[in-house]
Length: 122
Image (cartoon, rainbow, N blue to C red; front, side, top):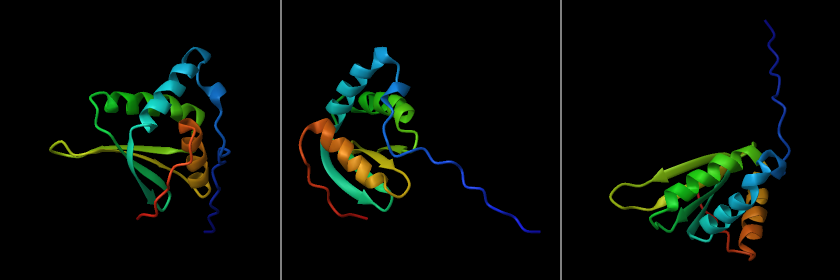
């Protein structure tokens, strides 16, 4: 039996802000800027990046709000949120297919309004 694998259509590597309700777009940008301003460390992954966030009392709420709307405008991204034990750091990962790393760098730099240092990692 000859099976053919049909590739799933890929979403373009571009943010579609119209996927976020107009009434929530400005708040999403503010949460995104605030969340990424708390980056303490960046680790490069084979398929994206992982960000260690400053552990203020609202970082988990901010990360959840970010993910809940960002997944709408950037459906090609996969998100991970890891909370380490015993007061350890919070890590947010953004990953995806080939080409997504450049997209992530551009978007985060744009949110922060500065070019940040992107470390080589795992």
